[in-house]
Length: 415
RNA sequence: GUGGCUGUAGCUCAAUUGGUUAGAGCGCCGGACUGUGGCUCCGGAGGUUGCGGGUUCAAUCCCCGUCAGCCACCCCA
Image 1 (cartoon, rainbow, N blue to C red):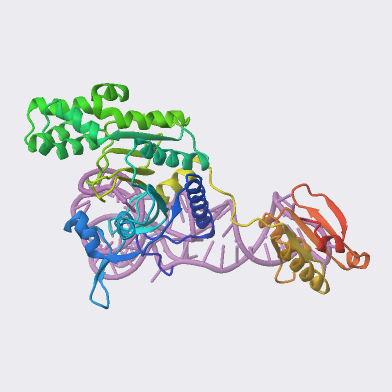
Image 2: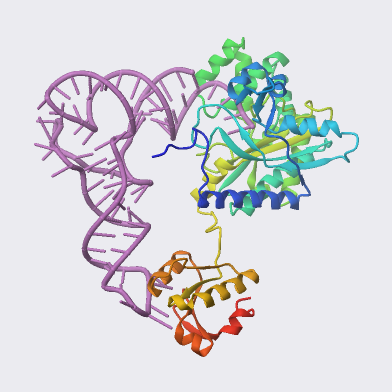
């Protein structure tokens, strides 16, 4: 063994890259359908850009170093700061709402696990300059439509949505103060994964009394409709966003779930996550509204290629092959090779994918190779055929053969 | 960064209380098959048993370290 890629980094063999390209193509196609324009930025940014926003402790999770110009730099761990900078530079000129997407490769230095590497590609879709809940619905719909375009339905994936403004209101009416909120959010976020006694301890450590603790658990267990009903005014954006998704016919995918909080501190409104239905994997996508980050209403989501790729493989909805041959050409004898080359090139000129054996072997061997390449047909050229100005076209699926004049093959027979 | 589990051909796995040249299936290459693929049969290549050290007459097996993978925590791109 000559070693392997660094931990958390991937080699993409053809079958891997086929899947990745399939995912990218679907991302781009759905984003285009939603009227989003693609942008990109540098993979390397100043370290400061990330520490400013997220604090010094994030340095530990960054690929960062000092460059030859003595600058502290980092491989980008997320796209939002870059987007924020780009938008800020032209904020006056850009017509709102801005609808942009990007597919950056992101890096993060941490111990890898399944679905979580040190590098991944992540679709980012953002809308900037629009406060309406319809914008939130738009992004959620795009995420769901990507799933549908990839062959996944409501039985495969679920979108769980909440709203921090609603959570805040529900907790406030139960006596939770503003300063107690972060802990309450953290407990809600973990309420499905962490045992209740541990959660109680978290709350107790934060100075929660019995009443406040009960309030948090009560909110966590509120069903979707109950939450909307109890939330009053504060439930209105979430209500509208969900109604919009229902109007689009995507209601089956969506459920209101108050235990969705999302980790990032900058989210201010609707937050959501997309999971595989069994919740066996990590989140496929997650996003939300972050109005405070720019001086504009803004929202976005990220969808990584790693978990998504695993899910597609699990569900057997991966693309077959990256190339699809139109024909495999076979020279019976060495003296037939010029005709094979001539035909190969003529077909290629017409845009037909063609391969032939680069080393002369028996017809049997060449047919084996043709079959291994999944060519739909083989064109066999031998002395007898050439004599008659013909070639044998063998259908490799059916096993049938036909004699076809060479000049027909050269002039669009396979078009 | 912390803890637990696991590392044997490309892949999936074997290898009798530690016992001598580490095997099989699949895959790959070649032959039977010098003008017809998928089947069959035969042969071949491919391993410093993750790496390093220790115990022992002897280590794939036991011990330590290290690296890597998986899982949980942290964190959640």
